[in-house]
Length: 406
Ligand code: HEM
Image 1 (tube, rainbow, N blue to C red):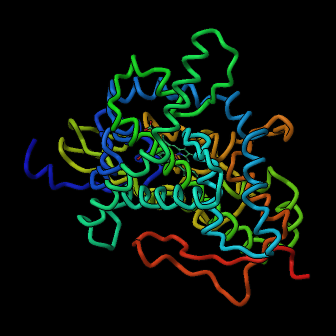
Image 2: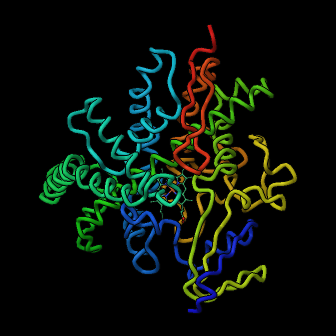
Image 3: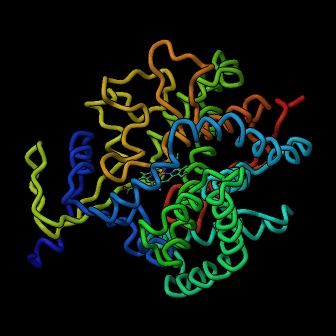
């Protein structure tokens, strides 16, 4: 590896180059290099055989039948419970609601139990999750990073003692009883899936701890930001297109299109990053030397006018796409690390004649639609604010009212 190549950074801005790079097996994940405290040895940081065997095991939980059960039975219950107090109050901060909702949903899929079921317990899990999010996105933090690392490492241990260890104990007991032939209801979640295959994967406890923490944050954070941004985009859209207020409240296919369009314009991470393990030639002729860093500028890629047209940067839920291009662009990546939770979060892409009764809409669509069914609107006295603690474009607060102003 040459010193020059190590310092080389190649930025990819076209859709074709990005897709090509995501698919190259000689380009290794490097987006989370500073986030090791939470991200060391978790799925998205693995490469080659190690990645393949972990992904193969976890794919067993990320299947259509499991998604259907989540979307039709498990999620609606959790969504209604989370929303009830805010509906009564008639107002909520969407940023807080997004994280609370998505935490509740991600805890189910990751396999983190809350035995007491109290608001205080959920509050503590929420604080842990926010700390893990800070850990994973440490590279973009504006705070003292060493101090952050210490605080987050401690949070992982405390979270393990309070939440993970009892969740593991309950699942081990269920799995033993199932193996003994008892008729028990074993949950379909990431932790159970890992425990079922501990022999095959040989994962030390610390890796299980980080993997489950990673699923908690990966599931919650991305979906929570997509939720707030989707509501923001749809509110802006129906101001200019009042004829779409009806579909926003009643047509889940319209809402899903709006969520996909939001995710295209606002990828959860504005860039993907890879390091070249060997020289790589992209089909466009770009040569990537061994050791170079490749930055996939998703913000530009998903607004590539060659693919999305001259108005690619505009939000348009009625936009049409060329064949083989997903409506959310490359916001769920592609290739080996393509998001395992894509269908769970955003549902299945609609085809001509999609039947709403037999369609998966994804959890973000489900919660955004609940907002519009409750006639969500911005709070005229409290305008939304950007988050000042990060260089990334997140909303810090987004106060809304329900009920359309009567
Ligand atoms: C709108 C919501 C979401 C977006 C935009 C999103 C985006 C992404 C992206 C871009 C990647 C690839 C990262 C890279 O290669 O650098 C990824 C991977 C991943 N996502 Fe998501 N994600 C979302 C929701 C979820 C949910 C709900 C879950 C879990 C239930 C999840 C779990 C994962 C996991 C485990 C990986 C790593 C996959 C692997 O490395 O094989 N994501 N996601």
